Each structure stands twice: as structure tokens, then as C-alpha cells.
Image (cartoon, rainbow, N blue to C red):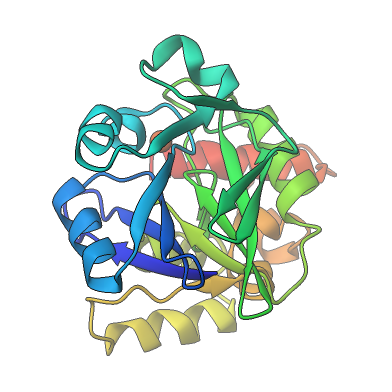
Length: 259
Ligand SMILES: [Fe+2]
């Protein structure tokens, strides 16, 4: 299986994905927003889109299902918990499900918090683990909880599902917010040398292709995965003393909401 990111460079900086099986010449599209771009990329790759997966119910991730169905005939799949808000689903997904991608497969994990129905998709490309994280984990950030989510639940998901992943796990989020998120990292942790180095590397980078991260990098640059950082804690004076990791996460989420 190969992950083919399609960076839309629109106002939302969406990244759509094709998960491609070269053996079967089949692909699964994740959160297709630009149907033209996604179907054109499948044609360019010489693969047929046999499935569409929504990581969550937000319109900018699940709003093109009918159009994708009409264009490709693919099976439309979304979290069972979102079924009440979405129409035309062929399969409802729950934690632990597997989805075929040609001769390979991906595994579904429930990752509630950004929305209560959110899922992430786990697989391997060239022997390397990856996660399609939707709007739950971004480069140097996490999803907001203002549109049907819950911050304490997101904290449990980030610490319980993402924090234990192996360093080399590649992270493929639903939006390319890395550059902007790094400015938040540096606002709450100005001494973070890894974040500063990556931010400056991005300055000189061609913007067309996103710079994806690994979980190991996220551990270094993502404040939401660094609740133990003394510098972050010192920059959140609203915290009780001594705060728990969850307190730090929630204070960061709140700060980021109005930042
Ligand atoms: Fe979303």
C-alpha cells in the first residue's frame, strides 16, 4: 500500500488521501473534498477507487460522498457514531474494524474528541507504520473541539491512542496546519529548538508539497504531546500548582482556541 497525499492548497489547507494498492490497482479515498482532483489523481495512478472513508462527519470531510458515489461507484464508509448525520452509507465503521485496500488493509481506531464520532486509520506503507489522523492530530497541533467535540475526551484520545505510538509512525492529517501550528508551539515554548529549526526549514520550502511528520517529531514539536514541559507549564500561569498533564492539555487547547 502507498499513501498518496493530495494537498489542495485551498482556504482550509485540506489534504485528501488516496490509499493505493498497486497489486490490485485499487484505491481507497479518505475525506475527499476536491472530487475532481481526487478522481484525476486515481486516473493518473492507474487505479480504481473502490472505497471512500470519512474520518468524521464534518461537511468538509464527508460532504462529497454522493458525488464520489456517482463518479466512482465506491463503497461509502463512515463511523457508525456519525451515521445519524450522514446519508448513503454502505458501511458503518467501529473501533477495530479492518477495511480492504486491494490486497492490503487498514485498521480503524475510534479517536473521539474533535467530534465524538472521529476515527483514525492505521496501516503500513513500505513497511513503515502510518496513521491517517483526520482532524484529531495535526502537525504540531490537535483538532479543535468547538464543533461537536469535547476537550477532555480529546485529551484522553491523544494521550491514550497517539502518545503510545512508535516514533517512526508517519502522521497524515486532514489539513496541513504545520507552519501555523509551529508558531503556537513557539509562543508557549520559545525554547523549543526542534520546533524553531523546523519552522525555519519550512520558510525556505516550496509550499506545494506538505512536510509530513512522524510521531517522534510530534513528541518534540507538538505542545499537546509535551504536557510535562517545564517551559510550557511556566507559560500557563492560569494552571493550578502542580497541574496534571490533562490540566496542561486543556489549558493549551483553551489558549489555542483564542490564539
Ligand atoms: Fe473537522
